[in-house]
Image 1: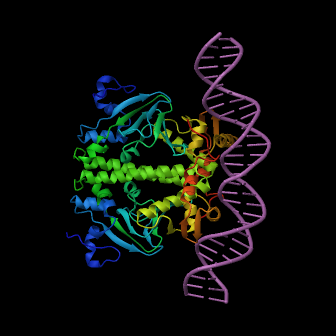
Image 2: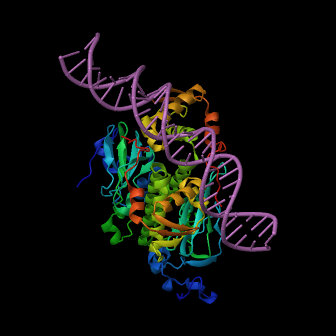
Image 3: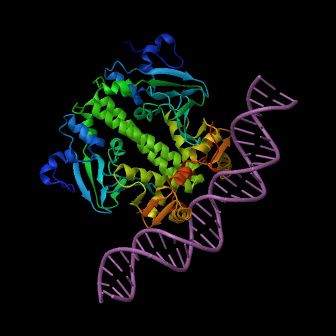
Length: 259
Length: 259
DNA sequence: CGGTGGATTGACAGGAGTCAACGTCTGTGG
DNA sequence: CCACAGACGTTGACTCCTGTCAATCCACCG
């Protein structure tokens, strides 16, 4: 199986290297490092998507990690009882799919929210067969990179667990908007004026609220002068106030400390 | 290096080998595998604690992972605003400290809840200096073990994020009790009658409730015949009902699906 | 014995969910 | 070009779960 796919702005001839040399995200990409370390079996494989197209389905066999090159993706987790939880949004330069390494299948379903592109990093290293016949094809340093990435994910999830419990709706939405702003900035967009890539219902689900609550809070933020909102277009007018809201000391909810 | 030492009830002279050969948890312990792979620098180091003694403080320099041998531990995370979140309880055979690998310092403060013992697994491999001067002292397979452990942690955290958002107080406590029961069983205790190692306030904090709510639910479970409770002693009388409660289809709360 | 911390219980209040109506935007087809 | 459907978003009225405040009880301990 030859791997020839296209990646948006990149022509076929250069696909063998998956366009890594021209990829703006290569410094953040473990594939780049793995390949640089002389591993011939790891090669980033670019793919493009339209809005609503599925990247991977929960339960599908693990076939690598995914690095976002452009656009936006959404991961959802479906509980035993059918409840759906939006576990995260993925912006350019971010990576997803790590939960699949251990179980050898993905835990989340991930779809594109828009016209988007990404690279699959086929870590054959982590599939069942290859791991049982260990070879030293991958240098210790490259795996260290991966381990650190994963450790970072663990840390971020932990603070998201924290947020889920300790924040009321207002603080949580403020924090979410600042987070989006930050990440938009990191991947080259404006920090203070951007288009939300997800629907209100997705935001609500992600923050464990209902869409009515999110909607109400948006209008509240507007009337208080923190934001200008028009549909999904958001402009941050008073970042300081939002930050105070998100980080400010808790105002009387869930104050119980634990030993 | 001779390997004959014991933990807890063991004398000093034998500490050098950390008692791995006699340790009941060795099959679940990455240290065992690392040592078996011929890595001389990785050696499990046993320590004992009394209740309330601190294992590691958040912010402290990372010095390895911790494997619980006996007793119980509690990890807490302190948010910027001072809020405390109980991020987890650790039972015998379980491992903690992974969030420290990437940041090179621990994110959680972990204390013993009781007289307890554990082994520190000093993964010098992951400290700043050694990782910058990579050596192949650790085999690919042993790191794979670690990567899989971490992937599992990521998966578990994700489902805990799910629980936090999608469960009301009653379901959440039921699920928590079943989880504790399961883990108690796994480490050799009775599944249906055990002593909770944590206070109501710790449970409440962990589940993002207040202790009054937890207390009320305990009495409710008792009057409904699911449990017998006396202080921290718990007996599960109707596991089926608890399971139905925890897993049952959501009863009208947070039902909004996301695309 | 009194003090302290953990646990239980009751009365009350409020934040956020539920239900429902309405408004806006987009794409499609006649 | 308009009508219409459907998805998405806003707003209001109401309910209820769970947090807040407070009193009480119990076990433990110096």
